[in-house]
Image 1 (cartoon, one colour):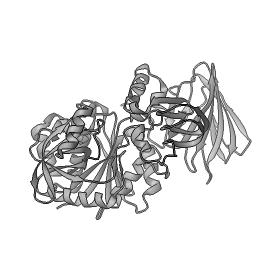
Image 2: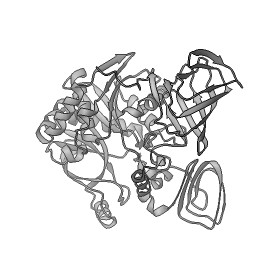
Image 3: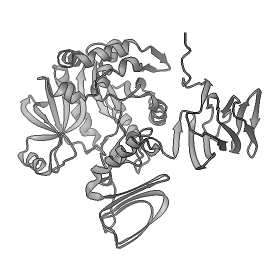
Image 4: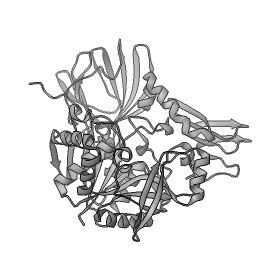
Amino acid sequence: MGILIPCIIAGGAGTRLWPISREARPKPFMRLPDGESLLQKTFLRAARLQGVERLMTVTNRELLFSTQDDYRAVNTGALALDFLLEPCGRNTAPAIAIAALHAQNQYGDDCQLLILPADHLIQDETAFAGAVAQARRLAAAGHLVTFGIQLTRAETGYGYIEAGAALGTDGLQVARFVEKPDASTAQQYLDSGRYLWNAGMFCLQVDTLLRELERYAPDVLDIARSSLDASPLLQGSGCLQRELPLEHFGKAPDISIDYALMERSSQVAVVPCSLGWNDIGSWQTLRELLPSDDAGNQVRGEAILHEVSNCYIDSPDRLIGAVGVHNLIVVDTPDALLIADAERSQDVKHIALELKKQGHETYRLHRTVNRPWGTYSVIEEGPRFKIKRIVVCPGASLSLQMHHHRSEHWVVVSGMARVINGERDFLLDTNESTFIPAGHSHRLSNPGVIDLVMIEVQSGEYLGEDDIVRFEDIYGRTPEPSN
């Protein structure tokens, strides 16, 4: 049996958890009441498995810096990291195929991948470790192993697995995978005792996985191979990184590993387990984790309630008053408010998808936007002006850039700024400012040891984020020079 490499798959916008989950800051980065994100919890759960020395992550390249920030805060054991960066989303089959090819190249045919979604919660880590040990033995025997969660209710929001014959003491054959059922069918599955929830977690030995992909999904494997071959391997300080080129990876079919392989292979096994598992797939499932008051309400933030029952209210920044309402989900953010029937939390995705269809920025961005160097928040905007609060982390630097259509006025609120403004290179202290005309090259850096906080006032005919020409960037966001 080869080494075990957990592989975190971090994709998808988490549309059922809008307006907290958005495309540029999706569900894995959501903070739970204990302050940890779902991504951090997944990382820690994988890192605590016996013998794990390296962890792989497949994610969108736009989420790399946020992912690294989350890992940095919890990677106290200095686990080695591999990043495979997708230019666009293509579902789990291409992602897992590329992870397998990368693992084969770097760590050998007999290494095992433990595929973990980035946005699931598992509360019983002892049971999780035991299930992984069972899955590893099945994988070493030539099975593609999935994890089946033992049913606790008739749930219509999950896919199901029908279990077959026993495979020794470690697991069962998979008779079939079943799509999300209606309520009556879900109840039949619960009553039968033969079904498990499909957790979307897998334990796969690389040689077995690649052999089965070659047989059942050769198109996925071919594009994965060409994508990996065209992506240079970057190494440094315990980290490997590959950025997959769009011209190759963009041709991959948008297909899940279940459809591409698991439903077709005869080598699939399942480990039944009870892990305290929750995929946090909707506001209704999230609220199950929180304590309720005597009327069944859960409140995050400040709220005054009068004759209110069975409501979930999430408003960390603004007081909510509610009178005589029942069975509601209320989620308030600085730029969007969700009000939903608690029984229809799965349908929140329709709001997010309509916003995407309209090209509305609240599908993609929060009012506060994360960048590799820190964050910015839009405080106010109107015709010809926009006001931002910018926070630059110690030692971080924005790109050397220029704007065609806007000028900017910078005022330092706290910390120290190093500024390049045209030909000038100088320091700005608290309460000092500078004006940057349109067309001037400029750069903002934080040379200090505390956060730099500043207010930026933009004015001009066009204030879109795409009015930016980058000349130099320490985060690799400048275009490649043409030949």
